[in-house]
Image (cartoon, rainbow, N blue to C red):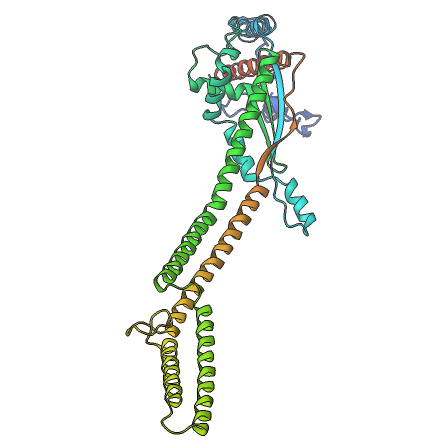
Length: 430
């Protein structure tokens, strides 16, 4: 009895240790333990037989709220926008115009290739200025005064979204201008293309034509300003040269009037001829006196007369030499002491002539520079060349109803999807 009791106790101990006893108590390998039967951190043992049953899925209140929000936030606005686009929105017609700023900058006649290149080139700076001008308030205001932009863009009164208010401010008109006038600018090519929209085809064409005319006027003003800047300096130089030449001529005229001569060189040649003539007469008088002394007696009146004639000739020669040398006035009289000599007179005259010639050469150079600046300004004139004349639409191109409908629906769906995801994220954290 005691042995059987001890065997039963050993078996119970082995079973508690997870061992199975076979035969005479020989142990077998332990039975593998399943992952589900391992103890959890909380100390409880999970078993498939102990899992709670999965509840069946069914629609709850939040599902109906989400479906209602889908209809309210996506379907209804999409339907409303579609009805508006296809029934209320007024057709818009587009007119396109394309142009570029050109500069006629031809070089010298021998540099034909460079001249052709410059002629076909465009100034990026001028094109940048024109691009900014097309989006300026000045252009919008001038065109509104000229053709009435507010009136033409506010005609469809039943279209409050795409039409402009009649009494819109200039700021509102500028914002609407950015919507209805699209300017495309190719920085590399220098080409500008403008698309103008309006609710009538003729209005769009008129706005495009007026925009092109205003742009052409602005480029012409730039060309005129550049031309004035180019010739302003040469004009001032030319005016100064003219004044200097005028002053030199007036000084020379006063000198001639004061000294009563036209050309001192002519008078000098005349004086030299007169002195040579007197020298010849003196030689004849000496010969005549020598002949008389050899043929007549001493005290003959003819000898005395010949001597007086020789003295008069000597006195006249001395006076003419003094006139040429430095004590007589402008002429050959030689009666006024203290006047400047003929040599000094010629020196003053030559100085005045040199001043006049220098002023005349400076004037000729200034005139040539001015004419060259004028020619250069003409060659570098800017103008607006249109490679695409303002078009006239036959069918409406705007509003792009299908594109707008898709964009509106997609945008609403994205907003709704983000809101739903945020809701479920908050709910899962709870």
